[in-house]
Image (cartoon, rainbow, N blue to C red; front, side):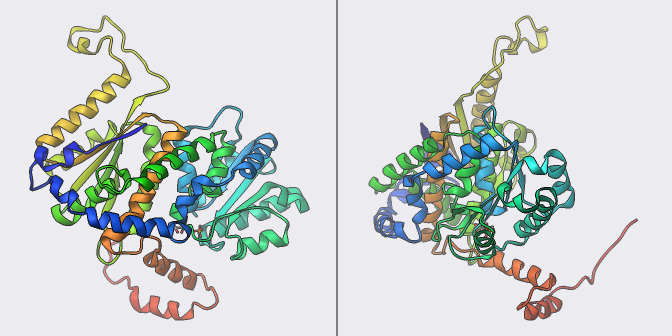
Length: 444
Ligand code: PA5
């Protein structure tokens, strides 16, 4: 179950300066109906991610089982949309017993690389190289080092320890995989990196971790069903979330969207959301900056600012009703702390969330709460689809293309130029024009 409580974002609770009027939400109804019909028609193209919940997962599950049976370690080599989704699924839904130990090689930080290599035995490791373009610098650099290590240990049998997830036709990785007879899974061409978690990009690592991927898709399907039928803004969770954030941003100056789960396992969900929201909507001088916080930890770090600092935030709390375990505080505590006796950690967590929300209402900070009855594959599937569709729909509100990332490409182009890649000589000249280190201070 996923419930969205947006009471505290409404003007009748926090006033018109910061809160949203119901009439304002309803005034978008024609826009919503029109955009809804466009989105339904785009499901075979730009909104292809909406079709992923309906895919056949038998090959993914079969190969994941083979990996589970054959390897002690599993390393995902990928970055951005090619790693954050898998990481989110594994962190929030936890690896099951008897699964290979799972690691991620995302960055090109040599010490990070070293710590992964130190933790595994190369010959007992399956490496899942994930890159839609097949050419991302970090991924290809990490893969190239791993490849030489595999060849050194295993000779021609190196290919047995590799599985690629990449574009079905294009890119270096596809070519290399075909030439070397390496097992490969496809990233459907219309699905961009940050919308690809429900493809083999996220599902293969999740299945290797023993997570029920069909339940994830069942949850996503349920959300798709609801969002496909409901054209009314107050009944369609994805459009509602998108509109609340859009109005808060464009009409109330809330340029920052904080997501704050009161469940540590969902911290990676926020990392995934941050990329989705930022890279999809941060265009043409628009967009909202997504910020990560975790309850209760960040109550002791951020809430002062959220309540009394600049009034530029809307907060999404994620609340979990049932945890897999709980601990009771013993009876008979000393007088000063005896109010805690008999209560449980979960109870304190929930009450701290309520207390924080009340404090934010007092300061008129708009906040919504997404409630999950439990952290389950089904609920996570619902949540993923909800935020993907909310992001896609927001593209129409902001009038930006949520599926490209031209500003990211530019940094990549300069890096290629600096690395001496063929065809990027002009970029090197442009770099030299742009980049100066004129004002500096150095202390040793
Ligand atoms: O959302 C995106 O498209 C990006 O974040 C990509 O996922 C990221 O740059 C990695 O790209 P690739 O999968 O081509 O290696």
